[in-house]
Length: 110
Image 1 (spheres, rainbow, N blue to C red):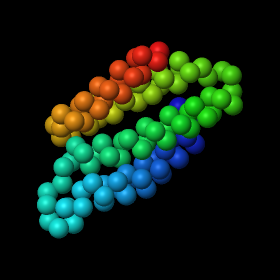
Image 2: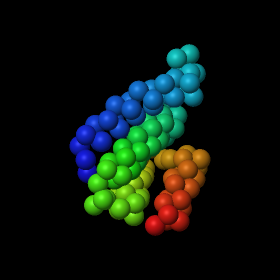
Image 3: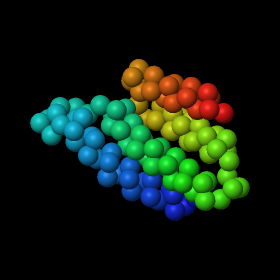
Image 4: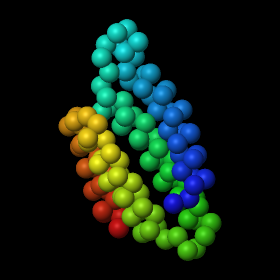
């Protein structure tokens, strides 16, 4: 795992995830209770996109990283994400469906 790509992905996730959470959960500002699963997942999506993009760009620079390795690495990150989020709060069905869609897309590319 490339530390530079990981650090950049975390920065992107914090910035983009915060903006998306402000847009999607503006009611929290007015006193509504937050939807924790959606709140956490909103940070995970830009992280995964940024991490995968960085890994793909890095893979294009070096012939040692194949697309299959990158897809497998992303698949592992999705599985880690799911196992990390589930104990914190029950994931909404829409979040579970999104994770299933990502996993099926990854399987079709392997």
